[in-house]
Image 1 (cartoon, rainbow, N blue to C red):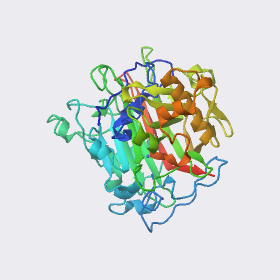
Image 2 (tube, rainbow, N blue to C red):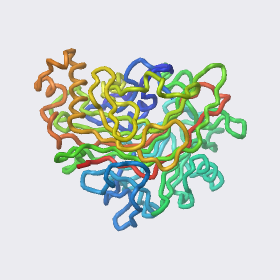
Image 3 (cartoon, rainbow, N blue to C red):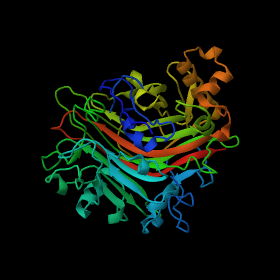
Amino acid sequence: MRTIGYNTGSFSATRQAGLTSLLAVALLVAACGGGGGSGTDEAPQAGGGGTDGTGGVDGGTQPPPDVGGSTGPTPQDGPDALYFRPSSALAAAGALDRVSGGNALFAAWNPKDPKTALKPGMKIMFFGQAQGCAGGTEGPLTALSDSRLAKVAGLTTLPHAAALPALRWTPSGHASGCDTQAQDRDGASAVFVNADDNAGAVGMLTTSGKQDDGANPFFGPYSAAGQNGAGANAYITGTFINFRQAWGAVDPLQPWTGTASARVRSVQSLGAVQLETTGGKAVQVKQQMMATFLNRSCMKETSGQPCQIQYLFNTAIARSGVSDWSQVAWFKNGDVWFDPAQGGIPIVDGPIYGNGSITSDSKTKLPLFISQGSATQHQAFSGRTFDVTIGFDQLINVLRIVAARKLGVEMSTLTDSQLASVWGSGWNRRDDWVLLSGHVGQEVYNPNSDHKVQIGGGFKSLFVGPQG
């Protein structure tokens, strides 16, 4: 396992995946690394099924189908699908441990141990800087109090009556790397799971700057020194729910099986968006759904190749000083880029357009994915379905873009053997492409410690799997 790295961009008005680099520890594959981050030197702007495929446990009551704006078929549990819905079954002791084929829920801030973060299962992770704690500290989470839960839920606009104490988390200072004063501190970003058959949801709050009590929270953004002391991810904090899959299993999840397109779908809500700013410093928040796919032949046959592709979909984004996103040049098209801090992992990102619209690569103009649901939002909303499909031909477009750039050749001259040198002999075999992980995340960029910048929202479901 190589050393985990992170991006070193500075904030600007250009496109950037921002905090996805902080997910590296959760997305890395032991054999080849990789997993998200900045694709260029541009700056940041500002997730699975259970043992029965439902996100619950065997024998659990099934929640009703999702609704909210997609023209795609109702998603179904299946052998190749990750479909997380927080039903009442998740309230049972140990139920979260078994989500995504795991044997223990992983919950921490600034995780650093791949032996725990890389195992299959559900991951609840916070990234940022904890006051009074040494750099490199991995810290625990603690349960939200009832009063704090009510306030957090109000900011997310999601129900919380079924969020039992074991189903709510916030960063805690009770860690060996934290000083005496920090030991009893916690907050303020938070996650809760409302385990209910009819009102199931995962609420998420990511906050920074002075809170209602006039103080900065225990856990907030990285300072100007960033995560590594050299400015990486400066002023950023994030909250992520990740559903890591057993990609090496005998029968892994294969989203492009048969003649299917891969589908990434999440029903989400957005409540509080607060963008206090001063002195001309821009601030930004966003909510995302993501999926990472891996080629197993590539893992066996190549050395030093990424073998993964990560898709990042911004379901919501708000930025100070921006009121008309149709005029924001970097947000109009998709991009395929490499994360230099994560061994060159290719990242596909871009806006989600309205139903039936294609997001294409800004450079080659090749189609990357198609929306069959809601477009990316820029203000509060409730119960919207964000739903994209990635045809196998569109995946091949990305493989060709990546291979041409890595080899320094024109795409028009790219040969199958050259593609195989980058992606392995199974680059064009549907069943060689498996799901590594899916997740929903939030991130905040805030260089103004005296001003609150936060985002509250969450999701009621996440599906990554085939659509016939």
